[in-house]
Image (cartoon, rainbow, N blue to C red; front, top):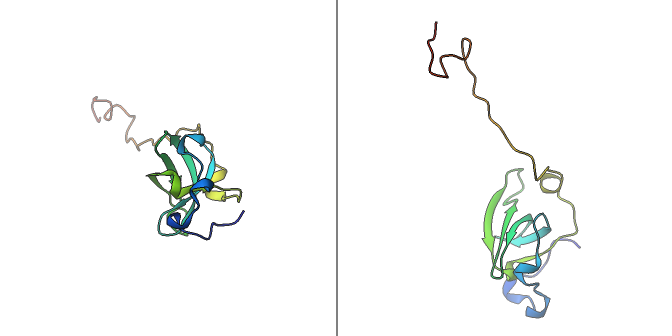
Length: 108
């Protein structure tokens, strides 16, 4: 299925899946100034939280959408669909000297 062509207000309510039918990591389209590729982060009976691509760049956004603004996506998105959802990002600050100064020791 390619990008949906109708805006949420024109969707047939019978075609709208309940928000809580989505599961973490499900690929979806979300409507935010047009349909955007996204991935479900969490779902409740009333809404879903989605990481999505707000534009043509590689950056992402996270927002909450009601069910009428979400639909399943079969098309692959290389930025969203190939990440390790269980990976942790870790930033290690540069430490000068032997590291003692950063830990409260002397800088000598």
